[in-house]
Length: 304
Length: 166
Image (cartoon, rainbow over the protein chains, first blue to last red):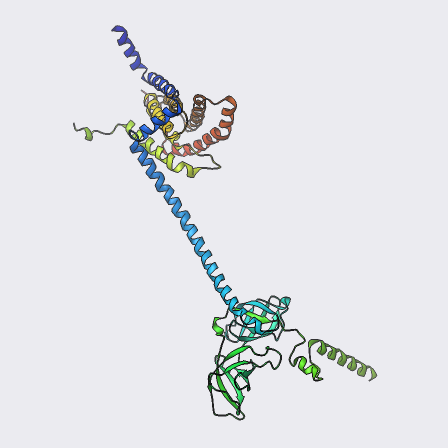
């Protein structure tokens, strides 16, 4: 009895050390368990005694993991929306290009696809800038087509860009032909908005007639769709009459165009004139004429 | 006297703090990971508990936390329990009510506490000398340094208590 009391007194004096001894021995005993027994103990304790703590830890973990997942999904959603918008735009562009290709068989020259970069702010329907220039073989005077019909012509070609004069430019003139009556006319835009055809007083133009390019002048290939006659004014002004034309191509909806890669020798007048014995004024011939004139001038100055 | 009207003993309040740090360790430690090295928020909390409460509460809390880690881990049972109880007991011997430890000493002790735990755990788990060296170099030491860095902030928030002897 005395021994027991002594032991108890010693234990109480060194409670810390005794506790340490107990937990060390218990830990070493635990370390001897086989894997199967370990799993059984783990599962048993985590699903009973330690369940409240386990639940709190799990709930916190799920919540923080979900917050991370939501942020990641939101970022991915934004990225996919942007990608979706790009793909939709590409799909629409693809559709436009497909429509434009329907015109390709009517033109015997190579076509060059171009994108509209800008429209002039002062005259939005006057001239446009496209993304192809002389490095791609674009030259002044080349015809420009849209998916539904004629749009205009190139009036200036720079490096990486070209300026296109559209049909509604008041300075633009296009020779057209009435498909039904085969009577010609000239397409103009008096106010930069409407399109009209100036025709001979005797020309047979009726509402609903289809107009195509005539091909005169060599800029536009013959037979390209231009528009429909809406009204034909019966009153003549001098020797001309006016017809209101609705173009096939809505100029406000164009994003991509085709440039007709017409060979440079087919300038105004074209090879039909050459065949008739006329000399066509191309850049080369103008240069030759200038140099010849300079030579004559210098000779005359020397004689004086 | 009503049981619930009595003030909660200081030691239990600290146990609640340690439990909170246990949850923090389980939930947020991974977010503080730098190059795969995680700090041990739990070690910081248990260290502070031990140095404030003395050896007896320290050894039991160390055992409880170590045993919990054993249950949550996949390795041999008792490894963490032994490592945590022994190392926390040793820190508890430096009870701040009896021994004054400066700010820098505490940070150094925290580093030693982390390394001692790793060594004890590896020893009980049966690590060889080479494996233990590599483990300490690549994991134990960087983690201890990271924990010391965060511990410095904790010790600034909870400075050493000054007791008047006499």
